[in-house]
Length: 419
Image 1 (cartoon, rainbow, N blue to C red):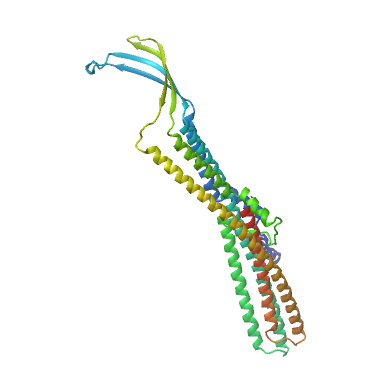
Image 2: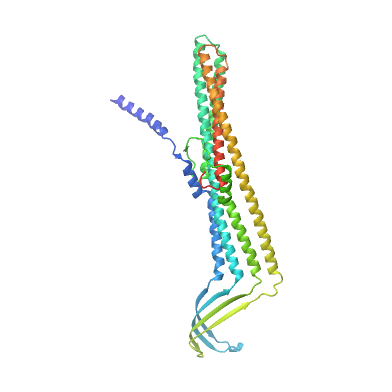
């Protein structure tokens, strides 16, 4: 009975860690990573805060065009005849209204602020587009690292299998003993390469999670698969000039700068304001319990020491700067489209070449194994074939990842919401 209990305890102890290790890390899909980048990316959050600040500034600038109403309660006990003031007491409530009648400079300033706020909101969309592209790149790095680990794991398995065959041939007296040292050294090199790849994979996963503001933990990603682009280069170019948020924001900033120029010129025009005030209360001596006044003020600036001229010159310079930046962004957008497409074309050709190279290397490995089994292979032939297959697998994986990143770059250059 005691032996049975001990056996059950041992089984429980041994089965516990095994079952814990069998639980795979959670899967982080690319769509989930992109959604989190849009919602929780650091640059996106900063851009959204800037857009909210600009919207608040625009709302503040519009207040000068709207009626202002205030209500006040007042009590006065004036008793300073020594200063030539009459002795009086007052207790009254007052309401005042201020209404801008004609204020072209304020109206144009508010319009320019609205355009600036719109540009900031579009810039937030541009930040989201950039965050999606950065996330896609980081995700592809993890996928590539996974593929490299798998390729090097296969190389280790092939090296171990070859070492077993060599040990058997040495034991049977068909091979020299020094071949064991050579095979063990080759296996050790493959194991080191596998460990390096695993470390690089873990670091890439950590970089991805830090980019997404996630807790650092073990994760799995979707397997690396080759993607394709359905649109043409010309269609991508037209879509980029129409939808790329960075270029649209630059156009909106140019509109805002033109509004600032118009507002600076409008400072030369007259302005008019209506003010009304009521009075309800009591006074001693009695001067009446109610009253009010209405006033219209019109002003025309004549001499201001050059302030308006300087403001207009600054506004024109800011407009020229915004136009130059718009042109620079347009050139950058067209460059991004051209470079992304050229990279996609090169990566696609390299994937085709790498696929053929892997097939040739695998055939070479198969023939080398057949020759080894027949006792006709030279000492390094099989090891060279194993190394060639491992290298071809890695090369193919790197080119597929490169092609997928180029696809993401095309979508980014075109201003698409998804990679």
